Amino acid sequence: MEGIPTSNEKSKKIEFPKISNEILAMAEEDQSMRMAMNDGAEWDHDIDVRNTERMKAIVAEIGWPTKSKVGEWPSYNAWLLVQHAMHDIDFMRHCLELMRAAPSEEIDPANIAMLEDRLNTHDGLPQKYGTQYSQSGERFEVEDVEKLDELRKAVGLPSIAEEEEDRKQYQKTD
Image 1 (cartoon, rainbow, N blue to C red):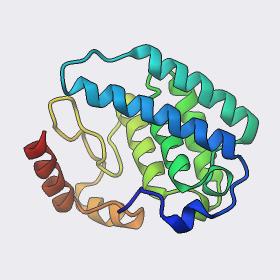
Image 2: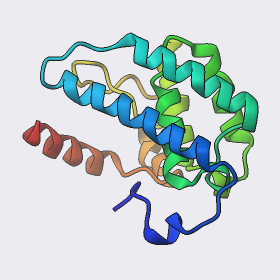
Image 3: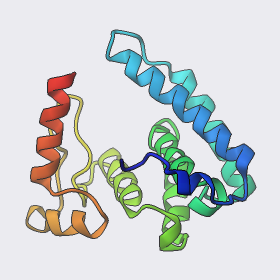
Image 4: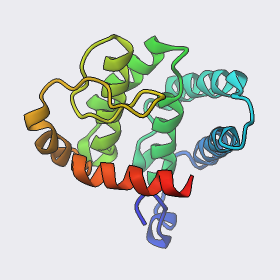
């Protein structure tokens, strides 16, 4: 299953195991809070702020948490935490630049695409990859609809048709 660490990954040596575990714990708290919102719980802004402040310290200490620094799953979760840092757009932009500058094998290009789209929609600009939706479930404006599937494929994202089918399946289980 994509995103779940394999036993092979668990055996790989990483540079910052303590930070890796910390990122995983922050992401677990982040996702637990967001899942609880589906059951009527309130969004806890303090969790996002606390996670962002810690991510700032981590980035200042080790740079972007790449796969070789913290592992594939923690690197993904570092992106997730930054994706939820909407209260600190400057930090999100900084992280996007760090991710773009990292060697391609160290960063999932789909994560770069999603963060770029998130920042574009925040700025009122069309998104390039079509990854961001409004709270009502409508896709935000896209730069070039004709090239959308081609651009998405280049970064490892599913086609729009596949994504729409996944969204329908998710809504059925919601």
